Image (cartoon, rainbow, N blue to C red; front, side):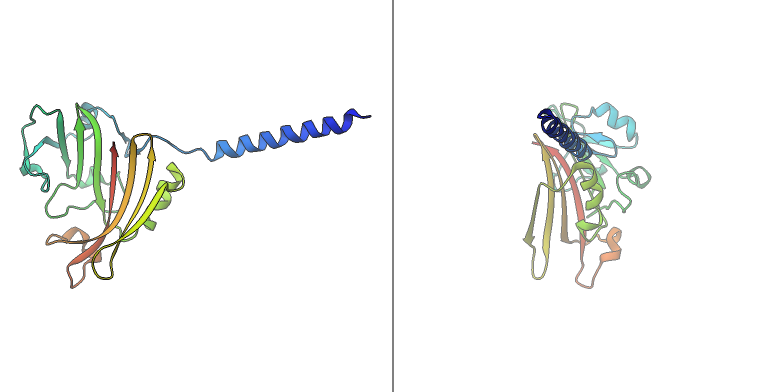
Length: 202
């Protein structure tokens, strides 16, 4: 008769542990970032196969990266690739991937032929419009912050990191002479709110 309470307690403990294990497994998230199937460390050869129209080389000007400013690769071990095909870029986001100041729509940087960083911007005026899909994959945001940007404007950041890898969303107000891609958010002041998507390895 004295064993019954102990058996009941043991059964209760097992039930609680089972429930916790089920809940924890249901709340696991990906710890490897990927954008349209591209992961950090991916081979350059795979990228070229996935984007056969990409232009790759060494930027002559780090602030202006497009097909005309990419020179032949040098011996530094770094290669920058530019993708502008809207049909191929549509797989990265349901929103339009932008070209700003005539620069490349998507920039991928390789170190020793391995993907080191990936960068693009979308026609999204608030992080909240795309945040849920990232939270579903990678869990709650690890770090957020807001920074002032001129009178009445702020930049909003949301970031995740696992090990040395970082994924960041940055909704910012930009001033540019080339806002044709962001025409939905143009104003008489010639500014637009867009969201940058950046993935890199430290």
